Image (cartoon, rainbow, N blue to C red; front, side, top):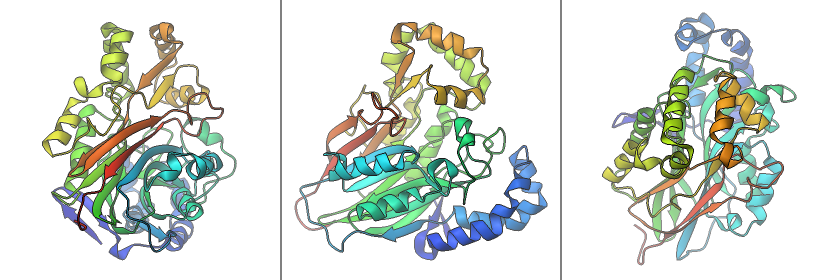
Length: 410
């Protein structure tokens, strides 16, 4: 069942499919059509294809579904503050390392809620795991998973070389919690580019995973958000507005995740190249310090102004000026992924621009925003990405504490 709330498409969990039902539908009804659909060169061609017309209702049902599961103990203690971590898991490719970190790391293991972006279900690149569900089961947490895409291929760049084939081909975002999850739902976002153009062909669109977490002393709406990378700055701002419109108004809420505030218009290779030259003219040191680490100052200011206008505090909820990822021009995986849509000659100029920075460019693209609650102690954890081989993810984990109000539950 779906509903429209202030322009945001929201899939209600009341009629949710189980993970077993989703797997059966994809294996028996959808996957047999993937090969012929992958021949389509655009979404308009896909929509006109007779095979897609046959499976479209089922595909939309799967992509509008919010998968949930309960593995946490029936009760969890009241605390003075509740900890939230947001982390782009880069598909969950390094699953065992991620699980070990979340189980044993002093900060991560103390988290009460995880807002996880880029989690696979049945993708060869991540061992055909249901990443969110398997993490939740192993860590004894509740979870809600919002699917974004049904992948018609194994992925982008080096992901195409993963052993085996996709069992299901689902990818999305998730919420994991030690406390009860209520009203889990999927907020579907408009695409920033045609997902059927290029090598990585996908059905669907980005989607945020939203849920009500019932803490002792606090009812909190949380939302795991991954904004489109290959999009314009205005599009990312509009996606955020769609997310805010999909949340209950006036109630305490936390939005966290990978917002892709790169400062670039990456909707096309041409736009990205032009943007690169603009930043070269601004100077590498100035661009890194005043734009890549402070995207709110100019290129992405529309998104951050929107949050403030709608009552969300992002300044106190983040370590400002602190990187959460880096572009490394010599990283093989990054290089090959970008080569699928950026011409090879661009990389010589990127090396030249970053010659004083050892070929590495820091970026701040992972964020929290908080409404109606007191936030404290924002952190960025670099150790799982920097200086680790292989890194657990191409993003750093970020965290905050939400102070529980005195008195009864809201």
